[in-house]
Amino acid sequence: MASKIYTKTGDKGTTGLFGGTRVSKDFEQIEAYGNIDELNSYIGLLKDLINELTFDSKDKIISILIHIQDRLFSIGSHLATDMRKIEKVKDLLPPLYDEDITQLEIAIDEMENSLEPMKYFVLPGGHKVISHCHIARCVCRRAERSVVRYSHIQSELEPHILPYLNRLSDYLFVLARFLTKKLNVQETPWIPKR
Image 1 (cartoon, one colour):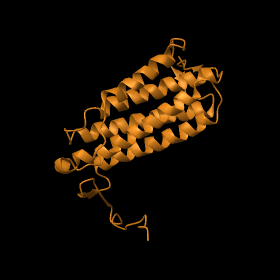
Image 2 (tube, rainbow, N blue to C red):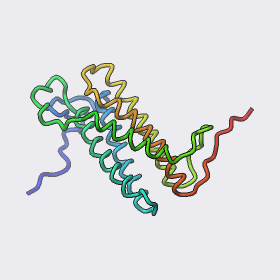
Image 3 (spheres, rainbow, N blue to C red):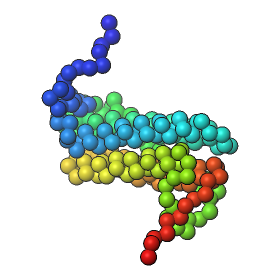
């Protein structure tokens, strides 16, 4: 018989880290990898919405989003690890690479080459997929902030995590602009009221 999804071990507000240690569910570490999990789910929604569209570079974007989801799972596993027991489990953690960040930078540069330079801030919106892209960007920034907070108490954070999240939010912003162009949606400039 398969094991059940519920274990009841978290009924009193604790959860287990990779390595076995139990901690409170409101611990900064849990907040950090929980936000990464939320971001990963939002990237999945964005991928599904983009998959419903028709434009020439859709398959490439879907492929990048799938790779992003893989990297976010890897980041989550690092963040879910009890660093006091890292020596016991480090060989089980999926590695993160400089190339993960470089891949995002290349994708950003390729999209930006087809876009007009930004002359103003733009209001999120214009199409549901563009709006979801902006929401994913905001979730990414929140995840990044929570990882920064966790890094204040855990200085031995895997060094690729913060640069990757920072670049990912840039990627999602440029992707929103790129989708605006592909869907022939007009960007709405933000013009401050004076």
